[in-house]
Length: 85
Image (cartoon, rainbow, N blue to C red; front, side, top):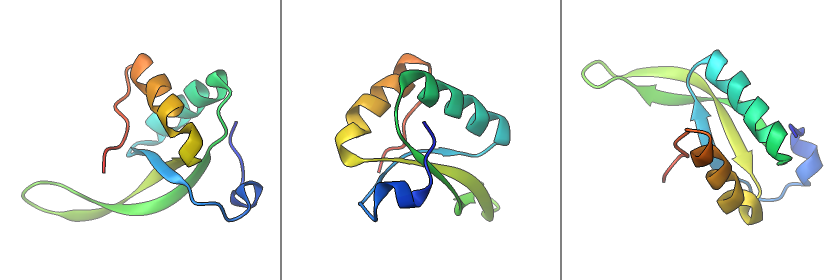
C-alpha cells in the first residue's frame, strides 16, 4: 500500500523502480497494492537519452530493505524489471 514518507519514520529505503511514464507508475502501484507491499513514491530527476542527454522527472518507488527481495520478485513475476544499482 502506498504510504507517506513519515510512515517509515526516517528509515532508510531501497530504490525498487523508476517509472518514466505516468501510466507505468499507476500500473505499478496497482501491482504493489495487490501484493500487499508498503512502499513510498517520490518524484525525482534522472538522466535520459543516449546521444542527447536530458534531465527528466520520474516516479521513484522505494521499499524497506527487508521487503526489497519480495518486492523485486513481485515485479519480475508481473513482467517488470526492478531497478539495479
